[in-house]
Image 1 (cartoon, each protein chain N blue to C red):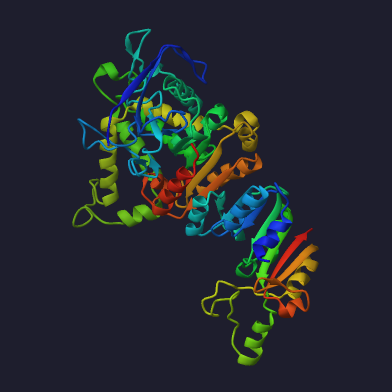
Image 2 (image 1 turned 135 degrees about the horizontal axis):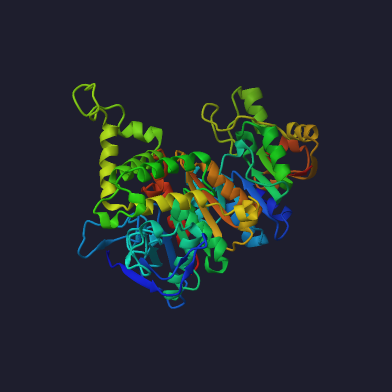
Amino acid sequence: MIVTSHKARFNEPLRLSSGAVLPEFEVAYETYGTLNAARSNAVLVCHALNASHHVAGTYADGPDNIGWWDNMVGPGKPLDTDRFFVIGSNYIGSCFGSTGPASINPATGKPWGADFPVVTVEDWVAAQARLADHLGIERFAAVMGGSIGAMQALQWSLDFPERVRHAIVIACTPRLTAQNIGFNEVARQAIMTDPDFHGGNYYDKGVVPARGLRIARMVGHITYLSDDAMMEKFGRALRREAPGYDFDIDFEIESYLRYQADKFAGYFDANTYLRITKELDYFDPAARFGGDLAKAFAQAKADFLVVSFTSDWRFSSARSREIVRALLDSRRIVSYLEIDAPQGHDCFLLDDARYHGALRAYFRNMPL
Amino acid sequence: MTEAETIARWVEPGARVLDLGCGDGRLLRSLWETNRAPGYGVEIDDAHVLECLRNDVNVLQMDLEDGLAAFADQSFDVANLTETLQAIHRQEYVLKEMLRVGREAMVSFPNFGYWRARIQIALAGHMPVSKELPYEWYNTPNVHHCTLVDFEALCGKLGFRILERVVLTDGGTVATLPNLLGALAVYRVTS
């Protein structure tokens, strides 16, 4: 499947949760499949931390650039683009096309940098709603995502209940734990204490805080994998004949983390990373309802599919069961899968027969 | 009369049903089609969960032996446990949970007091194998067998009231000597 990336421009200001205002913004997106005449087959796919609107397929000029959820979305895939019109949308604040910290601030003619506001999941969803208007989609057959993408699907069901028929919430949590926030703070400190950070205004200095970003990625990456999966993949295998009694790479896992860190620092923007960790920390849809998630879901009208993975310790199955309990308490229709798979939080990206079989069945039974 | 027909007769139109150990969801499917009773299934087995989704039945993948913590008190009209009682480990706990969550509980199980079972033990001297109990002793998932008398004694101990009972053998109801002549028992109880 050859796909094309688009951008939609919005000149109407967007008021953000923080009170700041984005005077104008762009949203990068891709679409797959065809919108039917009744406009009833649209599915919005929301992406997680380091992904983008490039959900599926490849580009004509980039045959190796495969979409991040290509095993889930496409012709004949669980989310079948022969039947559904699928939209991948890049969140605002990103570094992959939508307006973000590296974009030009119209007030100064220079990159936003440190001045780019902290955005929240609610802000992302509000920007996506503008995109839906732009594409002429009043109501989505489904809004789906994994991890931070799932938070957006959940938020959609609360903020635009009339516009979401099904919310598919995978590897999610209704709020971060103190441990989750702690890991995010390590990542932020790594970035902000990098001498190349320059308070966030590094774009015109010809440097990037790559050292900080590398450490942030290493910490993050560890939380995406389970202890068992790491042990299975790397064990205590050495990269050299014998321990070196120095600080070069001894173990395979060190080599892997350094490789992932280098790769990530080469394409991701530190200002975006900082803001996403804040957005994660702030996510708490129950907060407005005295901490009662069921009361929050009383706003929703969608049917829900919730999926968790037993080895995910970042957003554990217990967090997903909280979501399910609250949905049941608020009398929503919900199905819940708790898949016993070993790879940790990253399971949501993998091709597990039970997981994909369930999604396939769920979409197949979705009336259009 | 079948077990499913018995349950369908007891479930009022529009009732909210929680089916524990719901298998492929066929009971919930038929209750929705005949009684417009919206239901949720609880199932632990991956293959059954997938079948439920294929059958367009709401299913929650959970271990019912961990209790029904996901469900609020009295949030269902009916909690149903079809031919699963004998395969769980914590009978008292699960039954109490059913009546915490549901206004009524419907419970069915193969009757170990059925004469064919009794004869296999008493005369042939081996563990019963039958249509209702198709397993050998070494591969059965069943861990706690009981008879009608046993179940009713447990209901008494737990303070449950038996509202109705249907005893079945080969698709027919059994009126006389049910604990001897009944292969399968279906109960409707409340607290």
